[in-house]
Image (cartoon, rainbow, N blue to C red; front, side, top):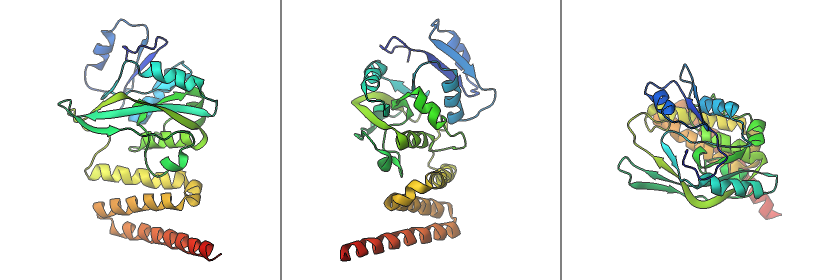
Length: 264
């Protein structure tokens, strides 16, 4: 991060109660742009990011996790774009690629959504993750930062709340590399704990954006379908039936509505 070609930079490092030598590594750098803060207890990614936000002073905020890498020109390209956009634009993002432990490219995420994209991101995370973002500080303050109650889906929730009231744009270049399979448990997991965390985040999403889902039934159907599948994977069959019934009711209501419109 300190190799960024954009000169006006402060780097806030938040150590979420790690047990490695993070503090020694940070202290080895002699750079006034670097500030180090440590949580005495592990609070999770959202809390760490909120601590970084509170300690920062700049008018624009970007995020970088310890398994991610910024291309040196990321901020140099994103800052003038965001500053040059109309006031209703609150965020810009870029593309990112994923690499395995052998530095082999395993996945590319190159979305092209721009403008008012809230309907497209309501049911799923279709923009880049947090490391790809550059956000206006007043926008982050308006939405209250990250939701610390979420164990999973915090990136998508953060982006979703920004997109609800702001426009976005993007740089069509890979400016972020994500390094996967680095030897410790990651936030996103495919085992039952990960599935349960994903289920919880989907249920919270339905409640948090209840009014918006009411006007976008297909998006609600997508989320309910995912919830039903998660319940089945976890063996919670009574809940699977409950949400499947909700799904069918919404689908039948929408189908009947379309039929009435056609008859007119």
